[in-house]
Length: 79
Ligand code: FES
Image (cartoon, rainbow, N blue to C red; front, side):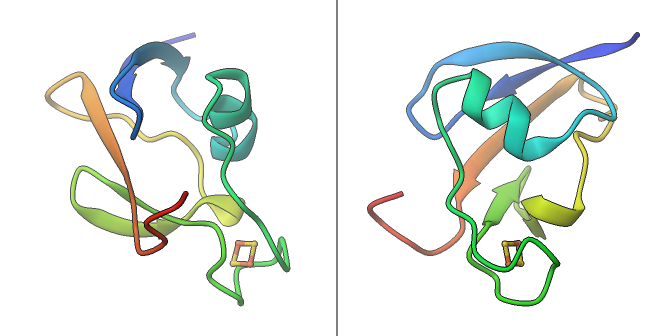
């Protein structure tokens, strides 16, 4: 299993398995991602990963050439 360093919106980092579920990884890291439809249509789970907006419920932790992913909240300032 390949791992990658993820920096979460609260500033801490964790090591996550590439290809794992974003929602589970975020929950384990203590930064749970809000959800709604769980099917990719509502946008409640949107996060920014290295500057690209993704929908966490239908995405997995990707590989990155830099070996590092930076996660930010996409829109909700209270996330
Ligand atoms: S929970 Fe609705 S798009 Fe992800």
